[in-house]
Length: 219
View 1: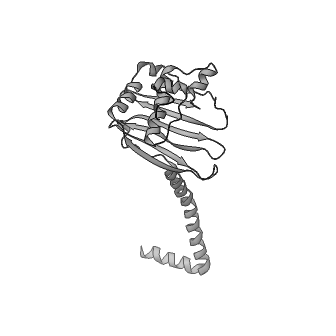
View 2: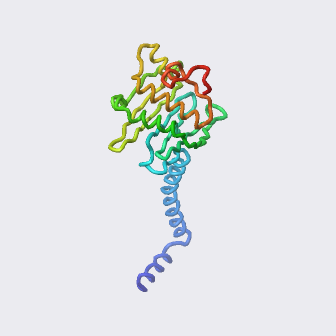
View 3: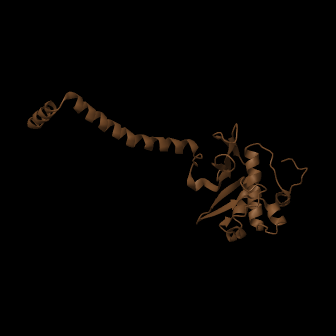
């Protein structure tokens, strides 16, 4: 060990003092350069991620959404329902369409009737017959729409659906109606979400029909 330290000191004396320090500085800069992007990426991921569920096994229904519009695309939690009757959803606010979105998570405890409605709906045998993707882009403005990714968690498996620009009344008008179970599922998701975030639901006639509501019903 003593011999090694002496050899190291002789090596340092052999090179000018400023060269040694320049080499050390280069090593530090290279190490920082490789570390910094990793840290920045992790921070960006954390700041834009949806809230994590309390337990994967406690979630019975999860819906994530992506808004496609003039501004940047935005991912957010559309709805998540837990087995303990609690539910959560995120709202989006922007000052302008090009500004970074501010996400706010809202929480609410579902009533027994609300929870039972969702539970029975997701357990319907007809729900298993739905396709994995419904990609009709039938919005009035093709560049502005929302894509919903729906996960229904059951004891033996997880069913996943993606629905682009959910609009059951417009789909029926264009003679491409959704299957009835999908209309019930999508409209119920919208109804529960509107109650959680305390915003008036904008339901079309097909949703009013399957939800047993009318235009005069408070929403």
